Length: 292
Length: 274
Image (tube, rainbow over the protein chains, first blue to last red):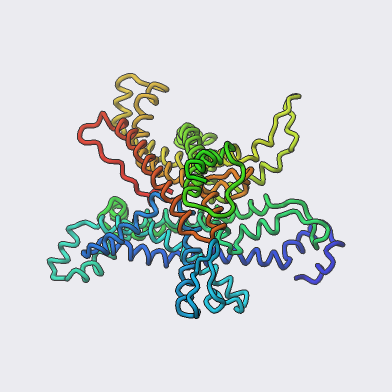
């Protein structure tokens, strides 16, 4: 906080606005943009990993594993993602508490009593004695898992399609060189599939960016939470009284997302160009002719 | 209360017909299935109207985006970027806040008072946002298809002496739709799923008349048990998504009927759209 902001009631115009925008709560609002970026930075690789597992499982020679992979990849098709976002965190939370209940609590009182879910104090997650930041981190971790499950299923779809799209002749050549199945997939299949996966994955990235405001529904203090909190009308009881300004806060968030989209589009265009170099595709052929 | 009574009491609860009070204790499976199914009326209402209006608007925007005139192209590009580049969730919030700012008493236009309060209600305000959103996404799909209309088709149309509206109506538009249809099916499914966001974002559910997810969350919150209500709403959505794919598949067969060879089955690839 700036020193001249000690008495905001005496300020007017631009200085007032400067003080208003640097207040402690606004710092939390700016930090929450970091929360969103952190979620993106963690979720994207985890979801890609989930997707990779799903795609490999769908291609597996073992039948039950293949069924599992197919079920996972097809579950996002018919059901809105928001249902998963609401379902996964609470189901996971109750599942973990139930497991801890089995081990940590004495006595075998049922977990579900009427409309309540009761576990003993030792089985609570996180423990009621733990500090506030653990509660927040736990909520955030549940949100990350929910995002990773949903977007992993989307990614599995994309990667499965990309693996199928690698020309059969490439794999046969590798086999003719005497590579075994594992070597073929590690040396030929996986390096080559990325160029086919990029359009799908970049679309997925765009969907992921646009799904981040749903964090608000999971109880994480994200940008939507702070926009509603700070934007709401403040009476003169507050340090910085103002009418309902939520529309300006949401406009700021809108601009943030438009900027994110614009940056992503630029980066993806470059990445596509780099990955199609030397590939036996239309894009690769165009680049070869350009260079020649 | 027997299940038949529950159905007569609650089947149309979401549009305000039947029992006003929601069940508060002793929730049974029948109540959950009935009320969540009742909420589905809203999802179907939003999806069908948004798709209907969005389809025509999107054709217009796609034509504007493809036009050589910068005064048409630039606004179309900006519109598409705005609605495809930002989350629907934020669009709902922003639209609600903006619509609330309109004067309560209405706006005077040439001595006539235009009422505005209905715009802040979900049935109108959220529908407008959904229409604009699907218009932007569909316009992008239609524009891509428009650019892929084979040159030979256009030359053939010229050779037959078709021009202007007749050429568009009989050659360009059907081909554009045929090429766009698989992606457009995906967009329709995404939009149908997006209708669940309406009552979570700004727009309040008047007298607890919400959509299917609204009631599912109500039950999940009251019973503290997510393993019943959410699978029910998921089941409803799987069912109606399959119906939607079936309907769009019928249109797809009609659009492709003149082509030699078997009509390709409509493939749904969710990752390649939005």
